[in-house]
Length: 446
Image (cartoon, rainbow, N blue to C red; front, side):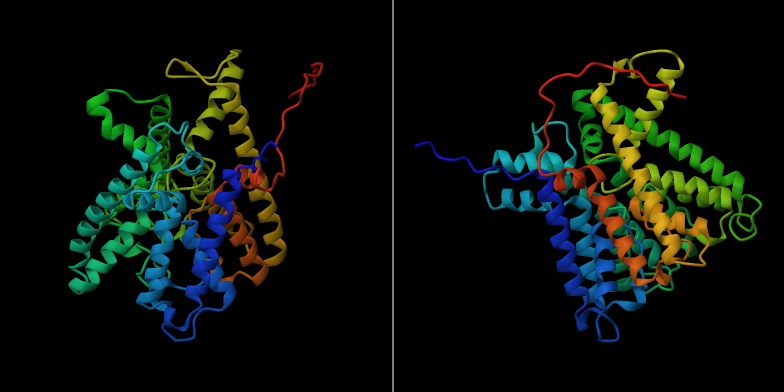
């Protein structure tokens, strides 16, 4: 008698369930009396919101992190940020390797899905590298920030603040301890804080695969097509965002106008980097002009790169869609980057991810206009996009959200971090392809 094979667990389901369990655990810890300054703990909805925001490395907050939470609560948030940024499968694999456990094929497939890698080849070695990169970058960033903060606060507090903000920004979370929902606005013209945090956000947002290839470039002299597209798209978006924000805010008395030319550049640079998808800010978001806010919404929707700590539809998705449009306009069949033709499956996936993202943002915005009656539409659209892109920037709506609004933003942050396709695959009972091909038809377009 043949032994019945057990069905393998879908990687998409594992990721969705895993993130959900971490969020629930985090919310339980944040609801404990020891987690808050008043000794009462957060109510269940605020605890769930904060835990989701930290695990999904978003940064939207309904209570101020620096003044509401005790050291215990802040460390819980920091742990959730680290686990959420790197991914629980990455953590599980790393500790398994430390204990000498063999990583099975199923676990390697889960890692491939979690890291959005193209293959399982060298996946365990990549996990080791990820932890080394993370420790080194966060420590270096934390030390530099601690030295800078030591001029403004006691040394022990400066060290803690430096490490907290380094971890938060490398993981593109955007949580801060400055108090009063101020984020880093006090350091808008400070080159040390601006440049260090921008580098942390950028390194966390380009993806570990890209980081690993750049690290090995001296030995291999090779950069994959993926890495080239990520770097090119990221640079274009960074430069374009900085230039547009600079000129749009140049004469705004509430943002750039009072600053020196160096401060104007640093403020524009930071505000171009942070929508990709960090969430901290040096310019007060509600004071920005409407054109600038709309540009930030676009940058938040695009987000970071695949296999990174950030969210959004990703830079490669955006680049693929632009490439498809360019090819269509030029009358060419293939989408070409760096003399390489992109597979049609990749183009279809890019289109699917973008449309799913747009539908989520549209749906959430529409519901929020009902639940948050009387609020400005741009403020609501900004909040919905920020939640989907796991950015964390806000025009001030988050603390005033109704219970229904908070639950909706929680679900949006979760969908943005795990990914619309991953959730769709997880809830689909069975994915099959047609056993035969149907006759082709034509419809009118445009």
